[in-house]
Each structure stands twice: as C-alpha cells, then as structure tokens.
Image (cartoon, rainbow, N blue to C red):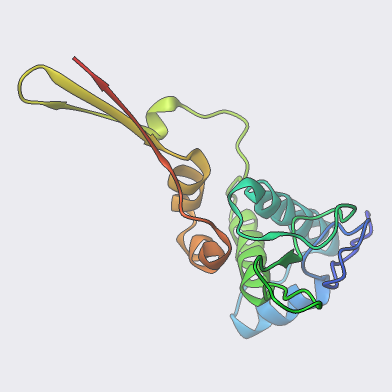
Length: 168
C-alpha cells in the first residue's frame, strides 16, 4: 500500500494528499458514512487530491513555493506583511473528504472521456442566428455533478470565463 504524505501548510515537496486516513475516519464516523478499507481509502484520498489539483489553473492566489508538490498551500496575493497570508485549507479538506465519499459510491472524479455535448450548449435565436457557448469544462461539467464538492471549493476558484461564439 502506498504511503500518504499529508500537506501540512508548509508546501512539502513530496506531499500527495490534503487529508490523512485518520481525518477521513473521523469525518466518516461523524457523518455516518460506511468505513472503507485502508487500501481503498489511500487510493481515494490520492485521487481526490489529484482531482482538486486538476483545477489549479482556476485557483486564486499563488503557490507558497515553487517546489511544493500540490496546488496548496496558496498565498493570498496583495498581502502587505512580510509573512505570507495563506488561504485556509479547512473547506479544501472538506471537498477532498466528500470526493472520497463520491468515489466510494462509484463515481469517477476524473473521467478520461467526455462528450462535447456535455458542456457545449447551442440555441437558435429567431432570425437565423445561432449561438453556441460553453463554460469551462471543470466548473460546469465535473463540478456540477458534485455540488457539495463545488460548494466547498468555491472560495478557492477565480470567476470562470465563458466562451461565446455567434454564427449567422
């Protein structure tokens, strides 16, 4: 079984998870989720962390240091003090823990195939004008399938840009 190295807000170079097995066990007991086997739990925690990190290009702030292995901790930009102000990871951890629950229920956080119809909308406007638009895939497709995870990640996401195309 692979070893989890949990990020401790210092920007570890070898961290591979935002949460520990013990944190999940406490969360599961508190929320009445079924316990998971250690080997499955370690994999689910690593995948949940990978899922969160796959959204890094949408996160606010910047990495604490360039050598850290994960997207967090992140520095709040514009801080006036010499000590960097870091974003709290409490909601990030909750998002990871709920992502573990989703995996335990059979959901794939990072599907390897998608259909453009899942995230591109088309509509005809009277007068032979057709509008086609899409929002960023992760924010409108993957996260929309996991609303509790989206809710906990909202504070870390910059506003999403929508792409718009108009055809005549």
